Amino acid sequence: MSALVDRNGLPLACTVVPANTHDSRLYEPTLEGFEIPEVSVRPTIISADAAYDAREIRQYNRNRGIKSNIPVNQRSRKQPKRGRPFWFDPELYKKRSAVERFFSWIEAFKKIVPRYERYEHSFLGLIHLACSVMIARVLG
Image (cartoon, rainbow, N blue to C red; front, side, top):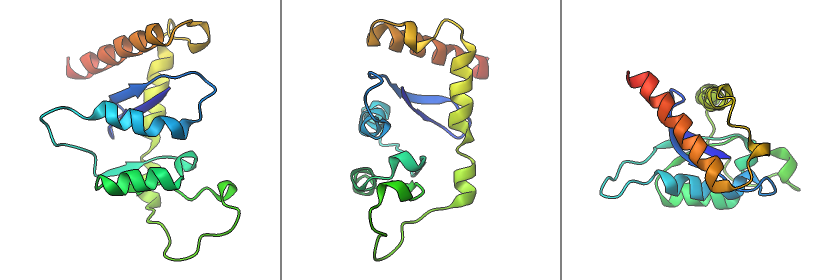
């Protein structure tokens, strides 16, 4: 599961695929799930962990005017990158704990266990139900 959350940990978009898909392949579908027709609001800065350090992801963000706050993953580099270093703000990256908070809220719903779900659409339905309960608790 891939999730896009705001700085308070509230869900904006979720994507579910089989476990044999790398997280970086879920980046674009998750961000496209957040796009709302007739509204031109989009994130300005996205903080992600080092698993999302890929040329395609940085290019995707650059094309949409989004700053990437992603640390350089040394394991994925055979040679050090030459040229200008990527922008990275460690203080802003520390606030990425909102994503971890979201996943702990999801785990608090005991019926949502990915290994027991047979179909993606039923698991995604449970995730959407849990997200709506989370948002209702915050608003109510």
